[in-house]
Image (cartoon, rainbow, N blue to C red):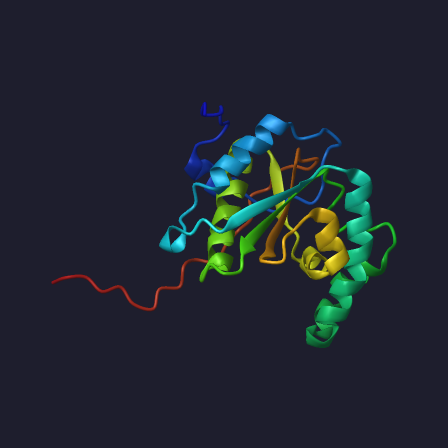
Length: 198
């Protein structure tokens, strides 16, 4: 396949990538999605398993419906584990107008074949490849962990044609950012030891 034109080098994308939570209404083209999937499947994979498969949703009504379905599931799942300090962040999920997909028009759910021994790690490696490629093409992305519990509900799985032997691992929205890309800071690496030959 032809290599797409990238606006950023890979290292520039590494430094620029951030979670985007505001998107323009412009639809992500199918050729762009194909490029993102190609980047995803080039990820490292344990034992050569390549256990990933993808669900691609670009239906705004379905995305809103999934958001409404997922919000109460997510709240009930984490309510017992959440501290009072973070409660104000969770209040957002009680708002009817809050869309967990941030009004993006493309959701790609990376699923993994459960029989593969390291399918979760493989899928997350594929996710990072895809998000870096998106950033290099001036697209935004955001992992939507709050949607995961919805993808375990049989009716949702049936609607999205997710086979029983696959599990949703990484739901990621992709789109054209409607906000400035402000670089985020990170802590310096913590190194427990650095052993070299004398």
